[in-house]
Length: 210
Image 1 (tube, rainbow, N blue to C red):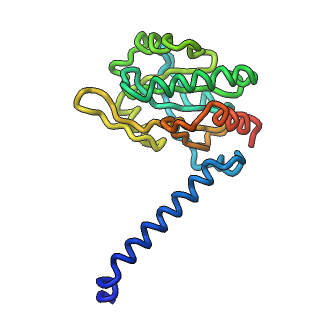
Image 2: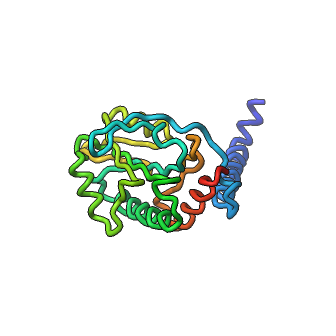
Image 3: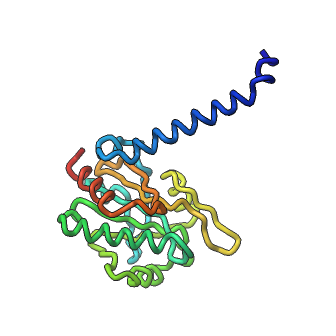
């Protein structure tokens, strides 16, 4: 048996790589299916949290139950992806307002991974940089202890690594949570093909209890 593997290890390894590529391709087809119900199968229960808003008031994940939630881990000192992703979310906000869903059936939750530098004043200034400012009627910026937030991000499936310069490397993903608290989708916010309509369509679907 060992002789067989020694003679054929390259073919076996190549076969394993091809199978992995096929599986990855199949997953991408599923993830980008035009039928929302095929993409939005519940993955797991989203982790619960207890954080603070910009006024220092406690906010628990259960406080937003009954609404579709878009959760984004970010920080205002981010040199690259956080600003354009937050801009994308402002467009999502405006589209949800037109559909009368924002604040009533859908909310956006931005959680800073850099709470030591991202004070309430800094985060308010960050929000004011956008033409369509984050509307507190349906968009919360949350803070908490750094270690606690990083563990929460990990539980959500988001990587956060603190660099020597004080900045953070992190997964740039928007998380979709349904009204019952089930995690339904990860949007790759660095994907140039991700657009507002794609996200809003999913939010609308879940707001109908699907």
